[in-house]
Length: 316
Ligand code: SF4
Ligand code: SF4
Image (cartoon, rainbow, N blue to C red; front, side):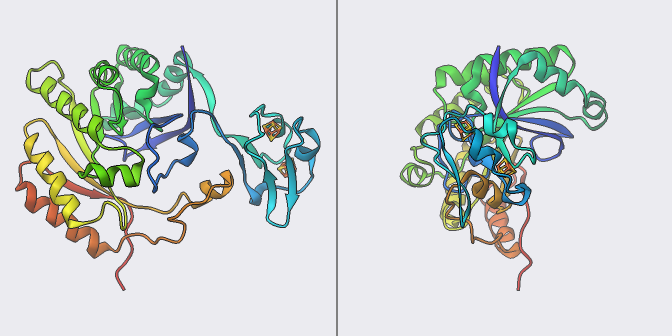
């Protein structure tokens, strides 16, 4: 079985419990305006160009069969509508300035790669996390991979937007030891404005996980994650509304994490030739994150532990 994966991180500590290896699967049904992994949204890979690595040899321009590349005063221009993603330019680039953003992996390859860090998972209670994009779009692959990891004594976490057909999502989450489940915006119209789709399937899937946990068909852990994005999710009203959802499921949720916006993906947008409306947006001030954390803690009244993660800006 095969799936497109656009990135891997080894030794991460923010995608579930302990030290983990995270695999990022290609393709996402949502288009969050703040997305930190823009190369993972489309179902197909992108051609990435990093100006700082380019030595200006023009090899790529000469070898592109579509005559699709050319230099302008802004750097290498790529007509992405005509690009067939054949990868010839990336193969021939001597400086690795051009790259295809994802490649096909087999389950065997993934398990072998994950096993490299088994001693760390054992020592630090970690494991493997499947993220994206939306990993649930690759349901048969990730279910088989989770089974294979379990057979090796490695726990598996699913980091998901929750936006997936419930019929597909149920067998997926039942295969994982942890579900890191995004609840970004409680109001469905605002969810649609900022992510491109209403949150109906997200609510339905969270209810389904809760039901399966209550009747003990699902014995894994559920963490809720809320990205705190300036002028989008960072309102008191949104936090209070999400707190109501958390309270309704407090008996099955182990933690609620508020994840601070970061702008460290600017270069990704540049290398893909994409505009990003958050290009000039700063990190959230530390006091603002503390205020939202206190709002969340007060609202859930100690029923669920609430934590904040990510970088914040020093207050001036
Ligand atoms: S991937 Fe192929 S078609 Fe696209 S720019 Fe490179 S050589 Fe041209
Ligand atoms: S082949 Fe690579 S190094 Fe040469 S001009 Fe193209 S992108 Fe730059």
